[in-house]
Picture 1: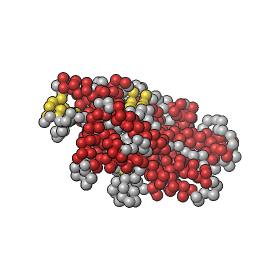
Picture 2: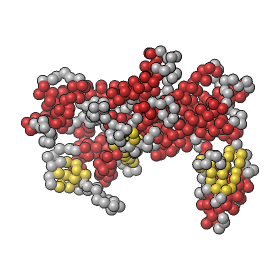
Picture 3: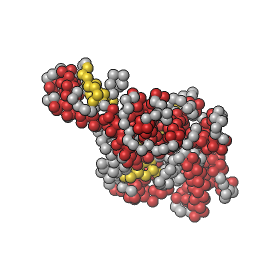
Picture 4: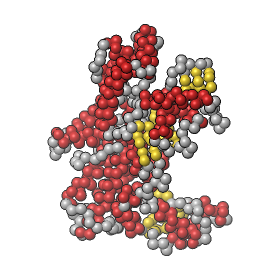
Length: 573
């Protein structure tokens, strides 16, 4: 099913051709002046030089053709050469009915389906999730769902930090304390304690402990059975907690891979980099130059082996690409990672292409996200100034929503608690995703949980309102939607008709914030219709059935959109 704007563009192209002008560059767009028109075309201005005519003269000639076209209610030429259009309600209604009848509302499947991998999460084992992990999880989950929806074979990989010196540090501290059984709360305290003992600038620096941690790390990596068992226990405890917290966020990974999974690939990879002459020795380390002729400034070389022979994040990330190529042959890998990692990932991407680690045509993209800040503009903290556990943040939002729901006497405590969790998740995710991923934003619980304005709860309230009307109607819509002539009805249909265009843009730009903007506009359009038109009390049965059909489609589109954002709507609010 063609996108609605494509259909309008097709009609415009025909009109330009009939008026005697080339139509290759003719495109329709949604008007930025809805008070004047619904759609616009500036093709006449683009053609003026080529046609040796004034843009307005071209526009007027095309408009004369368009006035005979059954698709358009109005067509006007305005200075300096715009063509302003309004479509007929019947044409719009036919499209809306087509959406209702087609799978995915008529969205065309991807022409060339790809294997897409989304690398998001990035949590470290032995540490509970904190608010610094929130954006990667929320944005990554939405991007993954969007890629799947448009027709790509998509996998999400949590890419755990489960290897390296931090594991040796934790094991050393556990042995020092004689702990063979421990919880994630124990690890939460042990991890930073052990880490500080290994930092020379720390007040608790312990050179003997640091040396022991290095020794254990080395022996673990060479297969020491005792340390391997402790490491496996750390993974078991950590993964259970991570999965619980990700489940609470409605974030689900197809792959639970970690840095440890790719260690076997590193020796051969490093040897090949040396054999191919890409890696060179520098002060005992092995590095790869990544600066290209087109760069405005020189990029530092990528270090793949430190002078002490150990690996770095770059080494592991390159080996991860080796493994992904071997097991999955991805066409497109999207890294949802803090934007401060842009240099690191650029180095990794360049090495992977230079070394032929990724196949020709494979796309590597870093979607770098900004910081979640408090009202003071600084990274969000607990009231005491510490880094907040993600579980605590979710509970804080849940409690704020539950407190707000006490005002509704129709919902008992049990239902309120269940519903508050659904609303809180929507508030949390929409509050994040409605901001452009690359930008920092202010995390404001009091604003995010409002039931009015551009918030998750407002979107849910709209869906619940539609559900309530459909339930009260008592019968499912049976016929097709038709246009009854109401402005708000047409406005709602126009918003619905934008769905396929929006989904394509959101996928191409990896921009969930544009999906949020769309459903906010759609919710507003529905509420305008709801307040202007008496739906349930409409006496004309055919009209009423049409209204209910329009509501049903609106509900389904909204529900699909919020699913792509990673949350759902309750039955009541």
